[in-house]
Length: 260
Ligand SMILES: [Fe+2]
Image 1 (tube, rainbow, N blue to C red):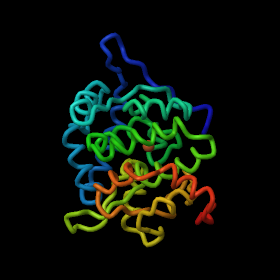
Image 2: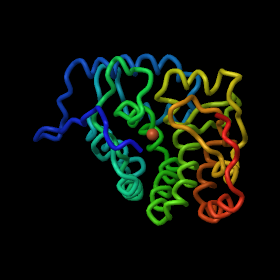
Image 3: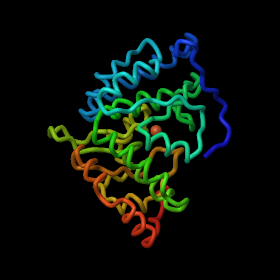
């Protein structure tokens, strides 16, 4: 994890709202409009439902209390305003308490395509729609609770579960429309939204928990491997499985060779 960011998260005024300059709303609009054209037939139906519920719009960066109102009503989650970078402990604590961390800054126009530290577009557009879904919300909460209790080495394995689901998961859509995206790391990235479904470069494998936990990843490249869950509800089965036992098993078996 980087220890310094070139971005500073904005703070709300006395009314709890953040006064972003027009130039930052404009970056949101660019990102929002560009993503909407590619996710329309690539994001899973559960994501689209969440997007409708949140009522995000192209014209401005949403305010966190607006998102909280919807998340509270659907799954009991809220969004926690955080600085650009937080510790793993803080990250797990927040998730365990059903608070999704969002740094209140947006990328500069010259970093429209990629930036290493997650900004408000990634957190809100990428993740918040599915936080209205009980199965996705449950997985995120359980991950936080397990992360809090895990050792440093176990956390490294656990992080791969989060990465291959919450960030980069694919799902076989139940309505026979084929492969769809639910991972927020993909859905907030224009190039990866196209690449994850349309390219013949990456490996796409059926989700297998031990396999996932043994698969190394890099955060700064298009992913070489995606795991596909057979239906969205499968996230509930993952939550109900003995994940820490699988972590111990994966640690015994060791890592797969990186594909990067
Ligand atoms: Fe993320």
